[in-house]
Length: 374
Image 1 (tube, one colour):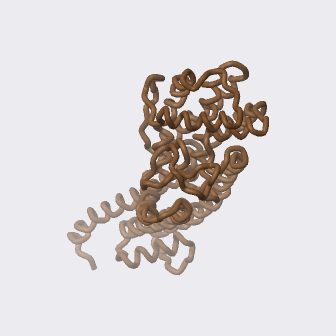
Image 2 (cartoon, one colour):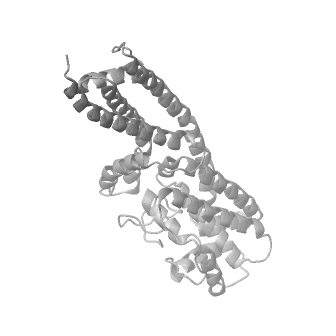
Image 3 (cartoon, rainbow, N blue to C red):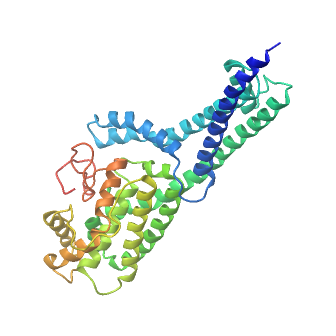
């Protein structure tokens, strides 16, 4: 029979175990709800930490790869793997939390408490107790396991549906702008095949695409790190190319049908800002048209020369169009470069630097490496 003094000494320890257990269970539930249930941008520190922790070793290995294709193969599993690891760690956290609650509600040891919590959480039923306090905890644990697994199973179709919708438009752009895409190349190819009247349709589609990506990728931030099926394709590089094409179009041809071009341009950089907010990437929300660009005037002229080769019509000469192009690009250049660096996008022209000094992959010769403008 336990002495009254010993029982009093045990009571504070049980209270601490109970509080810790409740904190772990509630905190894990909060992460599950923020990640799988809440239909709005809501960052979970738990899932972000897992994703960053997985990214570090993969990125360290990718930095030693000598080609874009090998680097892409190394980094491709990171985001999908983070989903699986997150589920496992959620269940492990619930098991630990409920084990602490089991220990607080009884005199079970560590091993017995973990066995009881695991039996209930995974509804295996190999350990049970007749004590009412433990039974209540067991019921809560038994409900938690299936709910979390069911939410994760329902989450995957939504996640991959949004990914497929994103990639469809990126793949369509490949035949119109090369792979990887480049803003001047879009205008050059449309001019080459005499389809400049169809540019409005392109910008309409990408305005909607930007809105859909902003919605899905802020709700499911892991999608930001999902890579395309081909090493030379990337959703962010495609968006940068479309925005550059819109900025070039407005800078060189201010007359005519420009409303949709402006709408697509604004939707694109608003999309980037939404993604930066959910990723914790800083940016200047109110840049000035006079702010400097990283892209140089000489690099700008290289793109203009490509457009002129295919007969793209220009109402303004390059020296007059440059200030107008700068005024548009300043809204998204720095942010685009930071995001491209963060997700290790394919090093396409006009998309900024990467972690390693790789030659830019040009859209006209996707597998040949030769110097070009970043």
